[in-house]
Image 1 (cartoon, protein in one colour):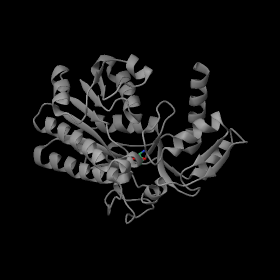
Image 2 (tube, helix red, strand yellow):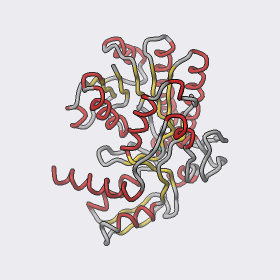
Image 3 (cartoon, protein in one colour):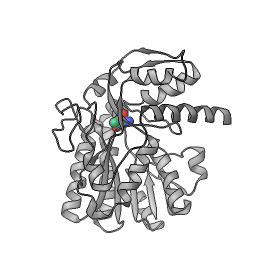
Length: 315
Ligand code: VAH
């Protein structure tokens, strides 16, 4: 069986739903410190557990005969800067618990998300390579960089089958992000429909790597379905689909909502965004386990606006 830790979060929710579609709802145990969306709670078994508590996680593994763990719980870049030690604790303790369960052969495989936040101001900004200098300037980025080192260490030293992806900014209409720097690219769609205007907390020309949730979930399923010998990178794979700026996204939205207006009031998240790459080279993922994306900025905009409108009708 599969255990998703952090199932109530932005990616965890849709990953739980997708894995239940593939494996059957009872084959996937969703777990988080708090309950999730109505759709998630109605889709199959849910267990309240704290990702930082080894006994609780080990107890779920034992109770449900878990083989694969997807550790999606973390504090993201913006919230992490407000509570550095809390972010470090959650992001690292949870990873050690799951890696040790695998080392002790209590589970078979681990998926653990990294992020483009592992890169910093000294990293080549355009087409950032799979292997390059990484001097992250956020607690979140430091925890993801360190986590990658531990994943690689546990794989080399103990043979742990842990697989990881450096997600770009992820955009979904089903789930809201929790305290990220790329969240403007989610908020903008909701506010375009609700108010016809949006004030971006990043400047007009801030280019960041982004991905529609459907592609991010596809990548997660694909890397876990790949034969183990295909996974040559055991730190974490670069992954990309598109890069865009707030102004180019606003232009796409205007094709549907001509009166839409965007304004710019950069805040502390601008410094975080400026420390990250503007585009990513993900050839290693494409070569090793056949990654390919489907959604570009045009398809993303259509999917997001249609998805949000459909939700409003339902309400
Ligand atoms: C964040 N959405 O903004 C996350 C992600 C690359 C961005 O790590 O912190």
